[in-house]
Image 1 (cartoon, rainbow, N blue to C red):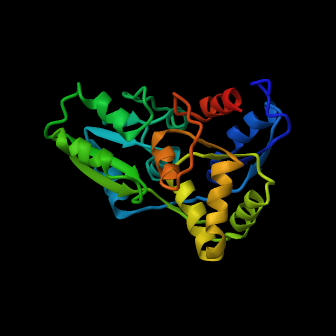
Image 2: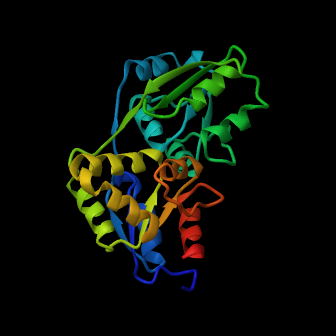
Length: 259
């Protein structure tokens, strides 16, 4: 293969529907056939903790956004022109979402993971600082625990839920297509996109789960956006293509260089 074209291969996108367009456009531009089958569904949440943060924003030294959905949920409620808190974000897409509301991040790590952000905070004094963390409650505890280890007081506010889609029909059909050899490449952009795919098929077709895993291990090119997602796949013995920089653009380039 040329290394710069998908040659009309079927490339599955499992990320939430509202985050799929950019990746879909990239795949099309590179000669692939994008197939969007979200295994993750996002829903914004107006939790009492989120309302508290916004109503008491002047008491928080930092706000940390880990995803575009967290930013959207926060600014759905927050209409302030000026935010006194400093803002940290993980990832280019989260930064882009923040910029839409007229705010620039004070901190963005080179490594777009919770661990990368904690590394960036190493040189910043967080002792006795108040940190707001609007996110999904299903996220890992690495970030809040790490911030607390630095001496910060962290308030986690549920800003959105990340659940299995209400209609799982397309996910089941996708799994059957993978087994039947109709999928060439599949992309995963978070651990939950992996977990939900496996959980839906296990509940629907428990006797065929091993077939699905075998197909993903042997016949399908599997790509993960970063090491945390790759770890979820490795639990099933599935090897992945992984970019050195954790963005969808870099993931696409990594796939093209390895197929």
